[in-house]
Length: 219
Image (cartoon, rainbow, N blue to C red; front, top):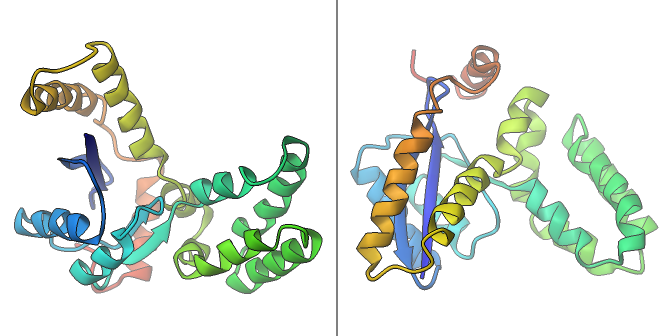
């Protein structure tokens, strides 16, 4: 059984765990149910959804929050790319990939992708993988570096998952699903005590979001 977690960043810059769902399989139908629950519980709008390539998630996202920007986790995409080559080549390839996702404009990023494919011709599927995901890769290129740090990776939720794993592993096994969720709930409450401050430089980031989403940010 797998516990799926949604973490949100509110308009005041504070993190909030939006929910936990337990299932044995994922897909568009499962994610559609999750997102519909969030709507029913009061989530009015989502500007950007950052995800790590979960099956069916982008489709469900667009169906539920059609105005939201779907952003893939660039860190996961880089890792998936490097896993397909030998250890000796990873450092050089990582440097070439960095030229793509640190570009100042989409045009510059595409030139970096062209150069990457030219240099690494012996791995034709790698460049194709980036191009298939490009519509979900490029959104963060429109934002300044401060915002990119928040949306180009799912590190924030990976940190939550890491603490969940420690809580579960310390107990070994659970007699029921409900007992496991109780432990995770207590873990959430402990984490929330540390989420007392907004993310770094939130004032500047908020103004940037107002410019990019002028009709959707709260006053």
